[in-house]
Amino acid sequence: MTRRDALIRCIDALHQEIGALKANDVGALERATDAKLHAIDDVRRLGDGPAGPELRELADEAHRLNETCRIYVNLQAANVRRRLQMLTGEGGNAYRRGGVAAYA
Image (tube, rainbow, N blue to C red; front, side, top):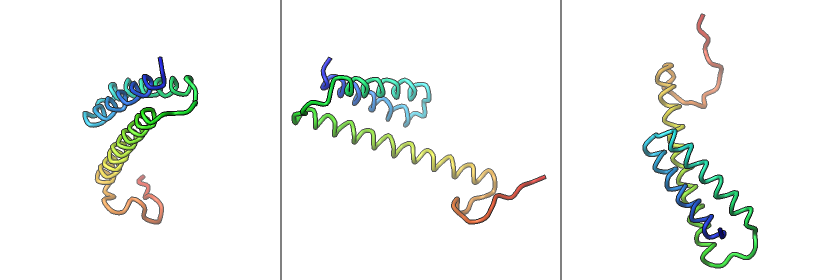
């Protein structure tokens, strides 16, 4: 296996992660994340010698896809926060001052 092969596996796993996030499929997300982490470990294990233009391009693509995953996760977290606020009657600002009211 080469660093190129490991980066391509990482990119494939990132595409799977994005698909799982879009489908809200937790099992597929876990599998894709595991595959991505293994591919990253393989890249690290294969060394950090000079990278030619092709490797840099693949690494840049992996970075862009990872940023896309991060954006999806942040959007989902914001949606969950908004829904929880609606359920608790706190539809306002999530970052307001003061404590949370306790009910007895």
